[in-house]
Length: 235
Image (tube, one colour):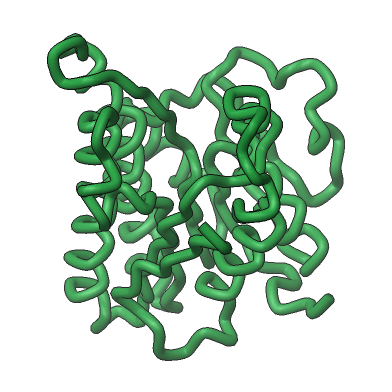
């Protein structure tokens, strides 16, 4: 394991979820100081990062609220990277999906990424030391035909991909590299429970996804920006 992130301040959203936890775990092993915003008033019972000497958990941070997001980022010294795995999934055919489901997907996937990118970019520009931003899109977000039966989700993740490309162009003069990953099905307990007959070996492991995100966020990445990395495993 390298120590590419030794002493660097990194935000990881969605750390109470499977992917965010895997990312935080990997970064801590590489020496990062992790700042984890969670929406709850307190960390969930058994939260693995509670009490870690290089983890700062911020509670009651609503990532769909611009003021809350700005206040969270304003308190972080010398922000190096911001990695956005917070989000959610919903599946329903177009004739059955409720408009509120569409709004929810746009809020928790696209709006959270937008507000975190906005706040992170402000902090990095003010610090004048560059930085890295990594968003999480999805295969259905960049291959919309894969989004049949989950149109609201696919649209929200397509917005994340578009945001990534636009910001990569906008922020390149400030040495802020902006990328995203687009996973196919991740190998999580929730996905195994939902699809027990699937071939899990074809799915993307959380560890592999975390490694890809860390590589894009690393100071060793000097040139890659505007990439939406396809991490499809064997699917």
